Length: 297
Length: 228
Ligand SMILES: Nc1ncnc2c1ncn2[C@@H]1O[C@H](COP(=O)(O)OP(=O)(O)OP(=O)(O)O)[C@@H](O)[C@H]1O
Ligand SMILES: [Mg+2]
Image 1 (cartoon, rainbow over the protein chains, first blue to last red):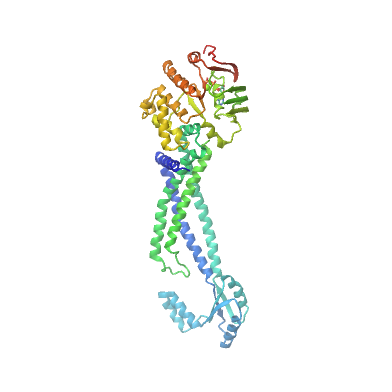
Image 2: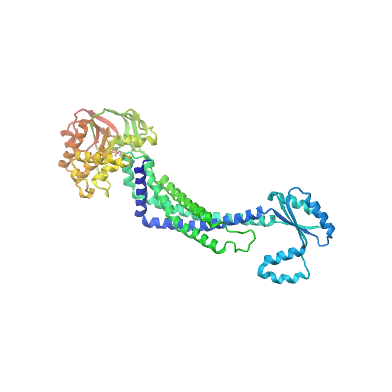
């Protein structure tokens, strides 16, 4: 496409937007509302996925030794576990060390647990890491069969529950946002329809003097895309700005194990790009719908 | 130049506007299409620039079959045909100059060439001095001159006019006819539907008379033939 042609399409598309100002405001408003919600939803989903991944990657399990086990039983167990080739690291943690760890994990509220130092209800344990997270399940079931093992705990349960939660949240989000996206597309396509009707005479003359169909259509795609771009400005400001603020306030201060906010850089750039992209796509989509239906060329 | 072979046009409501019509129009000819209202003149003309599709038969422009032409080729067909209407069809927000330039802009001519060519044709139709006027600042005859300028700005081989003087007084009509004559002298084929007995009888050309969608008379240097 020639540069002068491209300039003309942009100029015409912009003119349409200005001419249709009220319809444009409604469409841009719908895009804005939708994208703000899409942005918040995406920020949540990305961080939850990250959490699930962090936990999953932590290829660690805890083997609790039965309280009745004697020292030599524990040594025998250790030897037996050591023979499993998938294990990369293994460390014994006595019940006293476990309690200390628990108290320090709890921070302030951990003080009340100090009472238990007299009578420690915890078990001795082995902290075990495998080379790969996928090996956890197999190793866990082998160890569970061994004598003097009370329980084997690893993050699978948590991960499974988190993934299930993510799935549900994702579906609710997709349906809700899908409805909003459709509304926005519908409003855009309606605005474009108005433009097409308003420019009927002009379009007729263009066809008569031999303008190519694509030439006639382009300004409407530009108009749609522009509405998408305008509609993504506020969402980008809100979501990227909000995330940047939250990140600076709370990163590293969230007391949930494995949970860390995705670093603001590059996340806010990524999410801004995604929001802008979605805006442009629904804008063009809306105009394609109307152009197909109402622009007989 | 224009060849029609056994052309039928039936509209979706069942009206048969053109009925088994065959005709040849050579390059450089000037042809009037006459006939009572509803005879099928406009329908006949519209099939030439593919505003309407023939339901049967072939319409050939420069040997190219218009009827089974691909959608994509239609714009290029129309670049070779200038069309003029009774109601001018100018864009009210554009000046005379811009209305003419519009026809070249939308086929992606370079701005430099557009400027030069538009002034040329406005000069030819005698409207250069009013190039910056809006249509509502021009008389009917002047508006039709702009429309003619727009139709010929791309140097089409054929100019098709559907009652171009229908809205004009006799004197103005006559001025407009001089312009058509001039365009024809330069080698452009002209097909003009008209109800003006005066014009047809004074500026003698080939006359094709239609009745009920058929050609009932085809004479060189013919007369209008009946009372309108
Ligand atoms: N788009 C259409 N749909 C249905 N019927 C149509 C259409 N256009 C024209 N007709 C019918 O076809 C017939 C021929 O019409 P056409 O416009 O070709 O006549 P015409 O000779 O140009 O008449 P006039 O001198 O009044 O312009 C008429 O009966 C008309 O009602
Ligand atoms: Mg007619």
